[in-house]
Figure 1: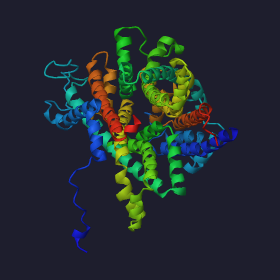
Figure 2 (figure 1 turned 90 degrees about the vertical axis):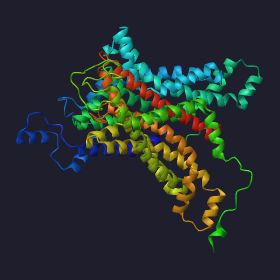
Figure 3 (figure 1 turned 30 degrees about the horizontal axis):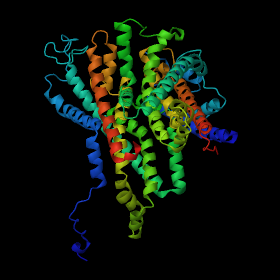
Figure 4 (figure 1 turned 180 degrees about the vertical axis):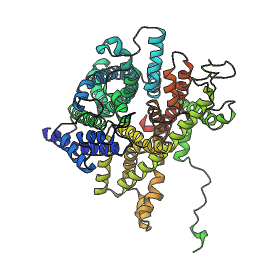
Length: 307
Length: 295
């Protein structure tokens, strides 16, 4: 297993290298510069500023020194937020995104698996059709529709929940953003669980368990569920990518101080280092999560051998 | 040798039911899919013909008609902050969103099918290399690169198509490759090879046409994904630029004014949801119809 992890981490290096390279050259190909301001800088000052950040050197040289920095874990200084390094910005803001994302995925997994199991046990009956209709709705209603509608209903009209803000992650402030993020995931997870469960419930070993006289709930929880949620585990990686996309919107609508808010703004302001730092951060996160998903898959399914 | 000699023998008197006949029958029995097709048909007609029949232009600003509620002063769905008719804007937005959905899906289709078919058919080292490449791309946070693209080159129509299409081809190529692998050892491919057809000819004439089933299913599921991706970009202010509208940009501006004029949010959202749902119902129906064992 350690060899497997080691190999996967080795494969991750060229992937991250590709990410850094793409991000670097795309960002630099963009017209404009981080030092464009309303007032035109005098040429001397501009030259000084560029020199300070090493941006007067040839592009290739800058790229190499940036790569060297990344290899040492140094993502450089922010070009817009003076006196802050990219590492500091990431460190200050990622807890908000992380807390949002984790809460959403936990909520989605709990609700999604329960609903999926329920639907599978009542296959082709009212409960099943009900759950699956809700699941299709959940996939089709985008976050940027649910979020404003929820704000309109629960904040503007009813006044039950605050419409925006973080407030240190208070439950009332988290309720709507987490719901919005979780909804599409609940939909997908419940569909996956149902599909897996329907198949497993027809398998021979479940019939054996029934013949042994086990209760239906025990069969489901102890025997069937473990096999049925396998496809779900490999969905974990893409799910997290989806959560990141979702949180760009959710953080904007609910005005939360997470990372998502920074990305678009920094890209528009040409804050090269912040943008690249975030891309690298998220790419690494997705790679790690995919690895964890594979390990969990092997742990759950004894037929899978990590090689 | 005359043409007559090569002509196929006349069809037998009793027409057999082809796989496609069966699929059509199953599809038409699926109520959700039929409802989706009817709704989608209406939406497409509205998007194509609608803008020509609205009494107001989608971009005609009228500063005295700001924020009319629906059904007032001859504006069926009301007006926005600049006094533009929401119905006209909504029809135009629907047209733009559907067009982007179709074109970007076509881009992803072209890349995905050729990539997957070549990898699957040629096999060996090349296959390994091409699919590794897809694996690597899969693990990138793509939305960031689309955003970077839009920021880098400014948002224009063509770029939206290309950017989204270039992102969405990965799954398509995997499906196509898997399908090609199972096709490649079938007898009719063997026969084509024996008849002297080259690799390119076999891929184009025999492999690709036989991929149609799974590809059609996946296309109907890609279109809503593309529409969603574009709306997402528009919502962040990076997609379609005003005065042009897409469903996403309408929802975004509706969300800003929702306290004062909730209809600006609700109508575009409803159209968006109905559009995505029709596609998803059709896609699910097609999958059940073409590949019944998946049920």
